[in-house]
Length: 260
Length: 225
Image (cartoon, rainbow over all chains, first blue to last red):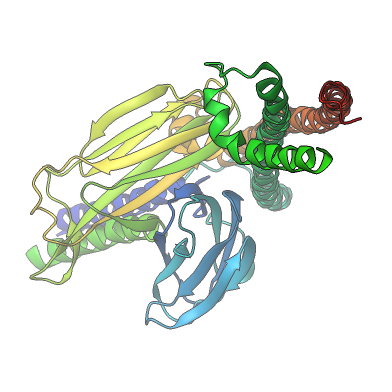
């Protein structure tokens, strides 16, 4: 009987150890892995892309998005609850921040729609930050799995240190999220500026070319009327310049008639 | 005896399931068509590791829900660096994990598409892909580090804080480099606007003078003036 009891307690101990080990594996796996996601993707013209995020009740979900490239820099944004109710609808906005408090458990649908644009594709950056109950940032919890240091005398001080480091970790996570947002803003401004540079160069060249062409074709009529012979080179601008030449010659013909 | 064993087994199994569920509950998912390619852009500094985890599910019409996809269905993952050079191009199964480290700072493009060639495999529905991309310090496997260096909890936490600060510092440096590029582009645009305006004005004035002289000689030749 004693032996049996001994063996049973041993087995229970083993069971407890297995459960603890699995909890450790689980907790240490989430040690340092935040549940937040951020993505930057290309949204083609005339299309709509949707992402789904599972939300827990009594938490908060913060969604932030920004259009960082594309003519017009705007997109339609909607959040639909798991039951199909449209929580947030925004039309043609270039950036936005929304905090959703999930009343229902399930998958929330976050959609970006570029249907109003026919040619320009947009690059959209979005970030989802999930906060559990109690308002702690990210999904990092206490980690009982890893071996704890010995010394009950120091435990009071150790708890203090541990709390300080936890709050430090959370604040650093928050700074990193801010950095991500700033990076998105900078990328958007940089893309806009590079677009502007290309546009300035192109239109400057085009306008100089147009000016030169107009000057040359206007003066060609002088060469044609003074030289009186058709040059092979001037055959192409003739089509453009013919109405001008005809009108001006008509003018001079009339004047000569008046004088004589 | 067998009842006890069963109970113990169920406890272990539920603990196991709970962990799996807890760890996989929050990933973002999206739907992808058969020949569709979805691309994500990650702007990262250099020497940063990125780990991507994905899991696919196929819609089962009979059970009317999404179930894990069959083994034959895989995803093709392609990663391009800022110079459009392919740094990773591999096929993974229905569940996979891809890793790469950036060597140049900038926008890296991660593209996913399914390798299915049979058009009826999707049964008219879409493939549901759960994707999770971890950048930099988040990509570290702390369990492994703790086991390898034999660290206690506090030591591990300090190591994590050091990595976090490192990451923030790298990002700041990259931000400084980007701001410099931005400033260069801005100054170049300003200069171009200024010079082109001056050149256009000079051309206009030169053409005007030339036309006046030409017209004058033309009219004099035609004995109109």
